[in-house]
Image (cartoon, rainbow, N blue to C red; front, top):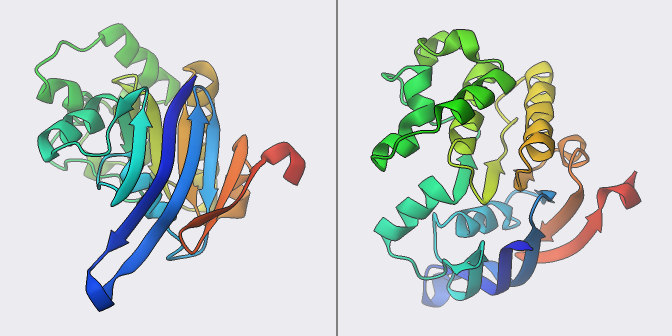
Length: 229
């Protein structure tokens, strides 16, 4: 089953002589349960692709489906709902609210929708990510690696169709980077979580099942990791 389906996706910024084509006619599918890495140099279009799949931005042309729903032309309000419910987003700088406890940061997407969280699943995630003794802490009392764990927990709580991670280890040292990658792989295996990770680090990319290389806004290669080892 396809969780992500991009057909002829093009993204152009600016107008007239100032136009910049960030993505050009990209076709891509990600199946349920896959762990996919997207690599490319700065300016290659990889982050643009993630933002389009995450409904942070809209394509100039083409169609994007998430779990069967066309998200290509969602208005801002519907896109915000989709980001809370169907797409888990993890960024390099965590994006936690400093005045809320770890527990409230994790529960925030569901609380914003005024829904009752599944606390059994909440504690399952918290335990899996080693955050049981940090729930009453504020983010500023945590290390960078612990803050990224909170961001991962928050992104998993809604059981999203896909988890999108934009350079999730870019702000961490080697030890914490390795731990975060192990946690993402754990989520992929144990929660059957579909993951797409953007990275410039080839070592990080090799932890995925499949590597997509982007350059000048186009997909240059799409290969299973087994063939690259």
